[in-house]
Image 1 (tube, rainbow, N blue to C red):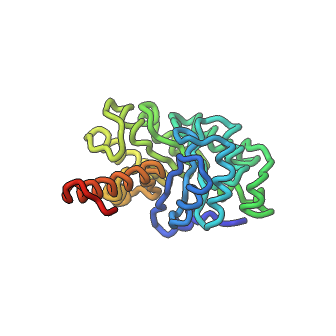
Image 2 (cartoon, helix red, strand yellow):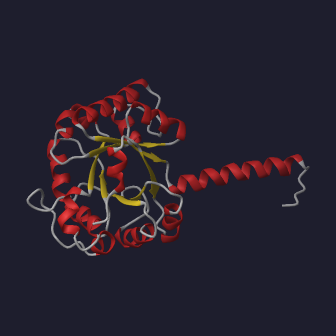
Image 3 (cartoon, rainbow, N blue to C red):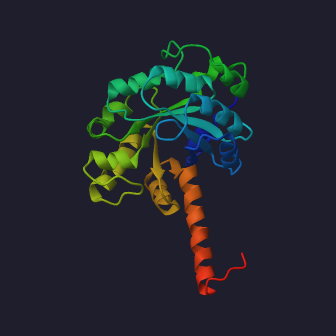
Length: 263
């Protein structure tokens, strides 16, 4: 079976740099994949993706050695299993708030006897290899998103769930959960303390901690405190930011020239 290189990065003590795909486009996905991210996550929760766009996007990513991940819309067994059958090497699941939900997430990602995943790997056989079913349980990574008030109260019971190998912080929902304004790279004391507590609890239980970041400076801070899975913005936001940067520069140049432009 094709190895999951995220596991090797973590085993070596490194941090995975993850890209985010919200645009339902194979060309966009392939372009992002060729930028040498460690992994790319197709977002089916808040991104403009559904299953019919997911599969060709995963196919596009597989033109490279970038690891394909999926954020599913919800803790629902059907879409989790279909995402894995399509070749996802990790599933990020939103709003996991307690032990029961964490256990269900793991069970949907594991074949019996370790879980309740139904057999039918379809495209996963093409991507991962004919021996997929023999190694999938030890290759696929389930991520539980920690972003609710309840999850903050039950960190230890969530992290202690057997087979839960990673968690992922959604900073916007986490901020809302503690009464703050949603957004990337929060600086409010209560949110920062929550982010630090989540990471420390994950470390205590041997669980990989991940977080969504809005800047490289904030991402580096998160790595410094122990996060080992870092997402930098998303495809749509990166495109918008670079467009704004270039347009601002051009308009300043045109304005300085008295309105005349040779561009």
